Image 1 (cartoon, rainbow, N blue to C red):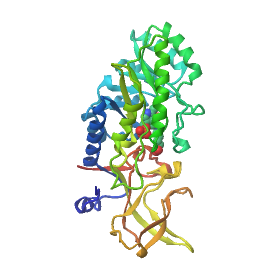
Image 2 (image 1 turned 135 degrees about the horizontal axis):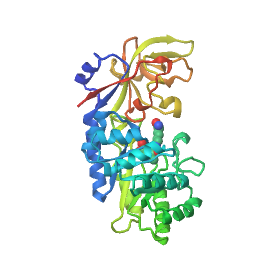
Image 3 (image 1 turned 45 degrees about the horizontal axis):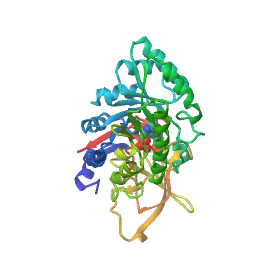
Image 4 (image 1 turned 90 degrees about the vertical axis):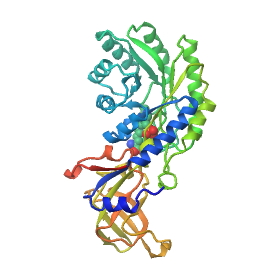
Amino acid sequence: MKMFTPEVLADLNKQETPFYFYDLGLLEQTLNVCSAAANIYGFKVHYALKANFNEPILKAIAAKGFGADCVSGNEVKLALKTGFKNDEVVFAGVGKSDKEIQEALALDIFCFNVESVEELSIINELAAKQQKKARIAIRINPNVDAKTHQHITTGLEENKFGINTWELNDCVKILQEAKHLELVGIHFHVGSQVRDLDVFKSLCLRVNEFNNWFLDRGFDLKVLNVGGGLGVDYYHPDENAITDFDSYFKVFDQFLDRRKGQEVHFELGRALVAASGALLTKVLYIKKGIKKNFMILDAGMTELMRPVLYQAYHQIENLSKPRSSDQADGLKYDVVGPICESTDTFCKEVLLPVSERGDLIAIRTAGAYGEVMASRYNLREPITAVYHQ
Ligand code: LLP
């Protein structure tokens, strides 16, 4: 699948760089493939807004019938504004403020994913004030290693997320007495950019244990929410533009023991939006060092933070110079940004066609956790977005 056709390129060359480019056609195809794969098993997918909360993207996802996974009151409000249904919104996060909880209660969202014992009591109190029953799921820390970068691992006991297993008895005590809480399910999320599907198999086996544990204590859970985390192929953005959703959902069908009528919910972010976005930037200068060539771009860590924060790889392409099949006429560049930080490097030793000032460069697979994590450091211009159907 080629993202930059000649007509797209002609259009992009006219825009002022840097900017994010979104291929809404590819997004739609990805959503269709994901929905079809999930529907086979009757699974419900919530989109994790944190990956990208641009309105045209949210509207496209809501229109396909996905639910929304939010981590702030603002995300909850934006989800509703862009077409997600309130009874398909879940609200997670280790530090929900009282105001955020009150607003979400008033909006009658489907469920709060509760991340600490103390939060349970607070939601109960706040729901009492509105004379409501808050639907909640307990986010359990399953202690499953996601085998991904340590900064995006969430499901280990050492991480701040979720309620640890030794606190579950305390939760049950509160739930038995709380008049304004209804336990609808249990929730898990082990980490992000998970490429090894065995991780999800291990998660399923843990979920089964907790599902039975709650049943033994009289809670017949309606929902098993297994979170998100499905990774994408950053190395082959055209060949593998759409993640293998089939194999992913199959693991859950095979290893999750859901009882009759029990729903399985997912919270996918990256796998739905990463491939459809790219950061477009121009070469400002080529600087020759003794042993190195630096390609200095007009975008930096302020526009795309992932390489600096997680040593993440994003494929870099020079769209102004067609890639030669003979790699010999290329050069290796350290591709860097303009920010006053020596960490402001996208990638070192990238083999590219010989490049020059003014060339248009694409940094691929940046639709998830790209634009949303941009900052104004160095008083940079706010980043803009261009959409293509
Ligand atoms: N559910 C929960 C509770 C989460 O914490 C996350 C992501 C998701 C769902 C969605 O995960 P996904 O399907 O996108 O992997 N900024 C990092 C990723 C942080 C992920 C945080 N939580 C990055 O750029 O790699």
